[in-house]
Image: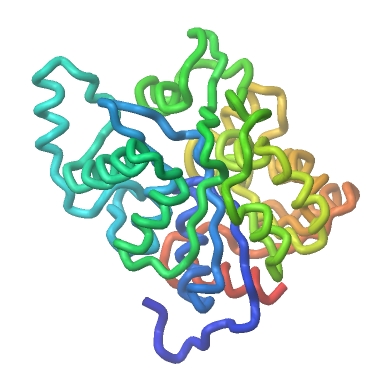
Length: 317
């Protein structure tokens, strides 16, 4: 928790676009420096998958577990101290065990799946889980409709989780698509959260498969464009390397420049200010030439203090 001497930032209504592990560090910083009720998080659900008959929403759960203070700090996902007896039992029945599901984590998936079976929306499930875990920020899925991220690779067509977890991001990516995005609708409150925010923060998540699915939902990118001067994106690439996950590799395989400048080109139409690490200050002029403002702030967050420092600096820009 933040030291008592740190004053909360008041008078700002913040909306953040987020993936999972990469975003959660900054989100925790924002959650601690803001009044938590002033934070709305729009979360990628392109990673969602059905396994063992259960609807699993990895990024929603990572964000919620992180803000609830129960996430496994070593992994950045799952629940701290969780056990895996059910997963071992499933393997004994010959069922797939490549996707780690802890026993307490399974309770979340069972609850979510039961709500959906009862006819409730994914956003209803997210709200129920948030409230039960005591999280005060608002957490919204990007859409209540399924929009799975599909990877076209040298090994064929793969659901993103099979590419990332089962195949450890080893296949060469040839294309990415978000199945059903064109007919999906933004979840209730998503477009309003962008429209009504004091400022919008794009967390340091994978631009292609964490932020990309959110942008693919009709109306989201257009609403961000309308608020461009108030959109601040934190670059997930530092010194040509991903802060987390295979962003750099995926960008390169798809022909994008895996640098802060490459991210700037992807975000330029809807982002007014790109936050880059001091390691990339040499690219600031090229980014500015695109018509974006540049803020140079330390963006590698290894400690709780660094998470709060970046969050506070972002809100004071």
